[in-house]
Every structure is written in C-alpha cells, then in structure tokens.
Amino acid sequence: MENNKFEVYQIQTVQRSSIHEAPYNPRKISNEARKKLKKGLKTYGLVQPIVVNRKTMNVVGGHQKLSIMDEEYKYPKNDYSLQVSMIQVDEETEVKINIFLNNPAAQGEWDNELLQEIKLSYPDIDFQKDLAFDMLDMQYIFAGSSLFDDENESLFDTKTEQKDIVDMVEEAKKADRLKAARQAERDMRKADNRSDNDYQAKYDDYTLTLVFENNAAKQDFCKRAHIEAKEKFVKSSILYDVADGKINMRGQP
Image (tube, rainbow, N blue to C red; front, side):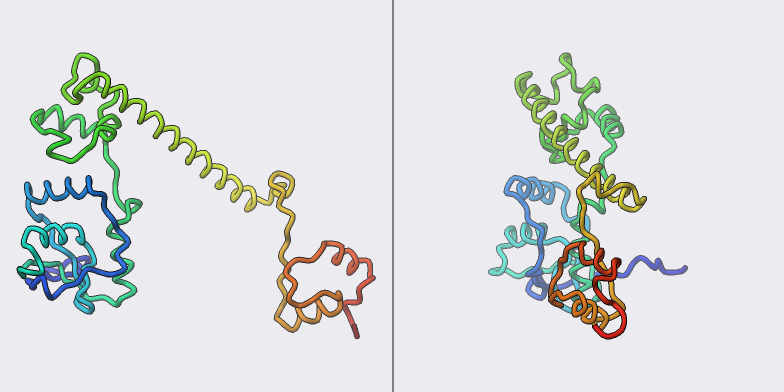
C-alpha cells in the first residue's frame, strides 16, 4: 500500500526533559480558556500528540496542553514520557508551522444548524460544561431556534442573563458590520485603482512615481532639473517645465 504523502511525521516516545517550549511561540491563553482546556484534557485525555521538530527539539504545536501535563506531573521535579508527532524541518519552516497550526484564519467555522441538530439528538450534552462554549457562543449558535425561546430556558439560567447576552451579541454584530464596511471600502479603492477610474478625484491621491532605467539616469534627471538626488518628492511643475523645454533633458545639461 502506498504511503500517504501528507504524513510527514513519525510517532516517537520521548522524555519531557528532552523537548523544549519554543521561545518565539506567539500563542497565548487566558486563565479562563486554560481552565477549559485543562478540564477537557482531564475528561477526554490527550487525543492528539504534541508536535516536535527533531532538529531543534522545540515544541511546534501543543504548548498549552504540554504546560497542563507539566503541572499535573509536577515537572521539572518529576520527568515523564510522552508520545509526540516528530517532524524534521529547518528553523524557519518550524516557525511557519507553529503559526499556521494556531491561525484561526486557516481553520473552519461552526455550522450552527448542525450544532442545533446535535443538541436535539443528544440533549444531555451540556454545551458549556462538556464542550467549553461560553454564553456568547451559545447565543450565536441557538438564537432563533426552538432551543432559545421564552418557553425553553434550559440553556440559560434567567431571562435577564439571556437579555444581557443578546445585548452583547448585538454589539459584536455592530463591530463585525463596521469591520466588513471598512474592508469593503479598502476593496473598492483597490478595484477602482486597478480599473483606472477617477481615483485621484475620489480619494485625493495626488502622487505619481517616476521609475528610471537605473540610478545614473535618475542622477542625470535630478542634475538637469536642479533638484537634490536624495529628494523623494518634487512638484509637478518640474514636468511641465520639461515639456515646455525650459529644462533641457537632452545634450549637455
């Protein structure tokens, strides 16, 4: 049977003392999120291995889970063994993988209708205690469904709490709409610029970049136009003077 080309790791047992937390790891976690992760780890166990780079023995993915296991085993006082997903890449690729594994933009999003069906099919699942959703998450998931109406308050302790969550959601939606509007504005500017519309009149863009064949050509232009070579911005009148022949751009300056 042909090997799966995407499986670039090997499962290997190592001692905790032989691997290190990556000093550059940009991922952080709040105390509340750490509590949820710790509870999940104790409930379900470690269902996927920590990722380690053989070349550096740095942890590439799973820092927070590892720190919770350290706490439970009282490391470094007590060393312990664990199975890791061992890869072998250079340091730059290691950093890229570290960020990629934690980047929400490269991950999926919830299908709320399917989550609602799961709650209906498995009513004993507590989305807060078992799955670590908070109240704001649950409002997004269940708003508008039969699981979140006045007659069914099983998801929320009080109507007051429900109203508070609704208010927070509305604020979040406003922020989302603002971000979307800003992004649409940026996209429109880019599109107008590419389509060569009247970009200057609409957005007051009054700069133009001149590109010379080489540095010598630039130096010659500056010398003839009587401007300093280090100057980055010059008035448009220079070009009019060139066009009118007031500045000699050919022959001896």
